[in-house]
Structure formats: structure tokens, C-alpha cells
Length: 241
Image 1 (tube, rainbow, N blue to C red):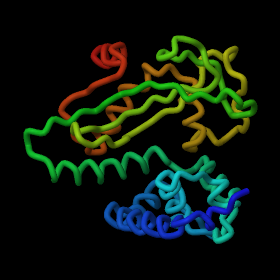
Image 2 (spheres, helix red, strand yellow; image 1 turned 90 degrees about the vertical axis):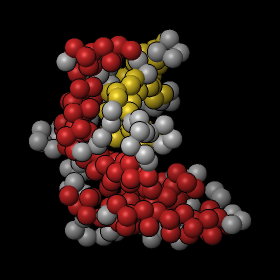
Image 3 (tube, one colour; image 1 turned 180 degrees about the vertical axis):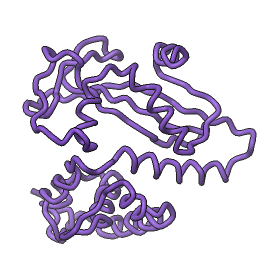
């Protein structure tokens, strides 16, 4: 397997990206936000280092395996990252919403009062054709391809001012029908935890999640004049709520 450190210019690029992300962390007070969302560790690798790795990977076009296993300079293994991401007590939804509020507020300050802002709802499919043991993996209908696929549906709420797009909230959905699920819930969790609530949400009809997603965003302080959707039926459902 190729070591990422031997790629020409990779080290310099990584340092440049990390520097800019570190500035972003400071601007949005990410450490404080993470702590407020219950994302903390008592020992081992710090939360900031793990978040830095996760934020950096998309800009470098790499993944957890290549970053931790193939990179000899990484001071921790992939299991540390997966355990961090898989914690059922961390409120990732709340963290995304709080970061989005900071970012949209910054963008609002850069635009004129006449700038039109909108909340956008999108329902797309996540294909997992080779997966076998993924929790709540199911057979779902892909409206774009007009056929059933193996994977999940991803319901996303985003904010836009016409020039920028900021993700606000999301829900990864399985099938509401047990007969269409290749896997069920693999681990029983305390019903009060974020992970347990997410699992219950995953087998809920998407139409019942739309209004709460928009309401959470508005109650947190995200400002928008309009509500748009990739599916007309979603807007019609919200009007009826």
C-alpha cells in the first residue's frame, strides 16, 4: 500500500489545509461547541486532534484507513477514529447545527439586507451495493433512478444565500418496513442516548421528520426567508403541518 507521505507535495498541502482549518476552529469556537454537545474524552487522543483529522480528510481526498494506517506519522490508529465517530452519546446533530449557525451568521454579515436566504430540503439515496452487515441497511426506492437500491435515504436540510450552501441538519433513513431491511439494530442502547434516538428516527417516515428539522434550525437562530425543496411533496406536507 502506498504511503501518503511519499506523494509529492502532500506534506505541504496537508499542513496548509490543517492551518486553515485550525483558523476556522478558532473562529467558530469549535472546541467549546463540541463540549456543549457532549463530545468529550477523558483520556487518549484529544477531541480537537480527532476533529482536525476528520475535517482535513475531504480536502486531501483521503480516508480514515489511508490517513491512520498508511500514514506512519499518524499517532493513533483507525480504531480510535471509528470509536470516536461511533459513540452513541455524542450529539453530532447538535454540533452540526451550532457550527452552521456560526457560519450562516458570518455569511449574513457579508451580504446586503436584500439578499434572499432559503432553507433547502433534499432527499437523496446513499448506495451501499456491496455492504452486508451495516446496521439498518435496507432496500429503499431511489426517485432519481426510479428503482429500488441497497442502501439508505439521506434527508438533508441546508441554508443558502444563492452563493453559499451550508448543511444544517440531516437524517440517515432505513426502510420503515422490517421486511425491507437487510439488517436490524445490532446493539441495544439506552433509549435516552443520541444513538438510540437516531436509530428510532431511521425507521420513521421522512415526512414526519421535515417539520422538526426546520423547527430546530429556526429555534437555534438560523435565519431564512424562504423554504425550498427538491421534492414538491415535501413542501406540501410542511404547509399542512
